[in-house]
Length: 581
Image (cartoon, rainbow, N blue to C red; front, side):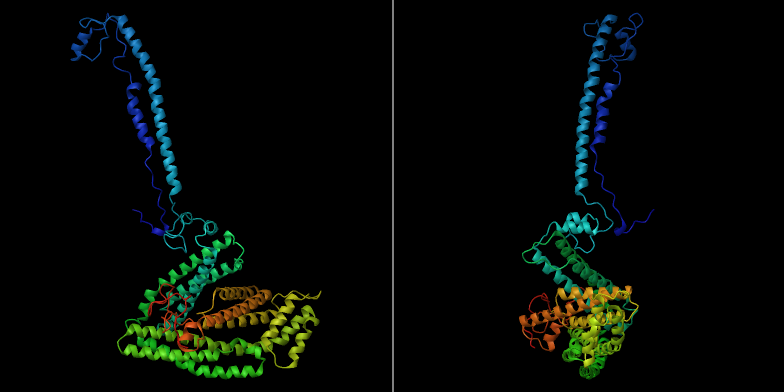
């Protein structure tokens, strides 16, 4: 016997509806059998001289056939030949009429029944969903997709079908799609952070499956960002969006839900690995977190000294991207200190669930401290690299566009302290936008302009990434879309050695940073100042909001499970509550 295929690959044959044509045909044969067979009474008889009389025939057969003698015949003697001939002719005439009429009537009835069966079968075929090889449409809620969407087809077909029937106002749909994408992005970031602590405790092999799930979700979120970026900006308030815009928003919603479900499906196994809630794995996890905390405490002081050094060497604009990061790192350390102590105390009191909640909050703050400190140290190295690259970049630009477009910039550099990253940025922009010399070759990545453009774009993208990660509780979808596109263009620039792509990536990253700063200012204006401690943890996305204590910490998982540690979570769009600064 062949093994039964698994449900995702099994194609169920269409259910056959009983056709009425077979029954009608059987009925036709049954009813017309007397017509097509020769009746006994109509069979030709032998001549009177040789045929026995009816009584004799009856006697020989043992019974007289009913109606065998024609009307008026002598029952006691033989039937005359002329009487048999006349009666036989009448019967044949009647049989000829029946032969024609009855099949016509029954044939018409069969045709009507067959037509009814065909119409009924066609209706069922049109209304029944054919098998597509999958149980649900990828990225959609079970039972929530429209009927025409569930019937399969390509992505473009599904987009057009959804875009033709918007279920909600477009403005509301824009808000839903943006919030879903922000939440999916935050879920990936938080999952990656906690995964780092699990890997430090159990090793890379033990978390390999979870790391694969996070990478898959991260790639899908990046693809959704690209989809939303390619769709362009939302239309103005007085402009009606086309069906394409609506279709893109609905696709964003469905794919974000799929990302959330992918991460949510791993949370139970991940919690079993860490064993925080039952207390068995808490001591070792607390030790790992405290070791990282102590190491970062020393690095914060070193980063503060490093920031002062580069501030004295370069122009003030050179350190603007990391301004305030050391202070923010100190605030996160204060919060982490409090939560580590509370985790150890509640664990000693026999409350492992609360201890796990505080430990997870401390881990989130520690991850952000590491990112903030790394950002300061990285900028110091990048500024030194850019300073060394300025002369070669100038020479390559002059060879391409001449000295005149670069005269003013050269004078600024010669005056004294400058921002070498900004100098490289302006050199790359001038060399790729000014009219080239007739004998100049187009930039192809073989001269000093390409590494300069990549260096500038990489620094801008990293600075925007650090700021977003440390303020993700307030940063909306616009900044995230531009930052994701900057990462995509930078990767393409490196693979294709295209300075223009690197230049555009730098511009998008700088836009993302400005939009993120606007979101943070609006957040603080709406909810009041948020200093260190709990308020800063909510602003940074370490805590998800929802009360005076800042709500539960973010944990590994999707939107449905990442707030599982702690009290009930209110939506992230609402005011996090009365948080003391």
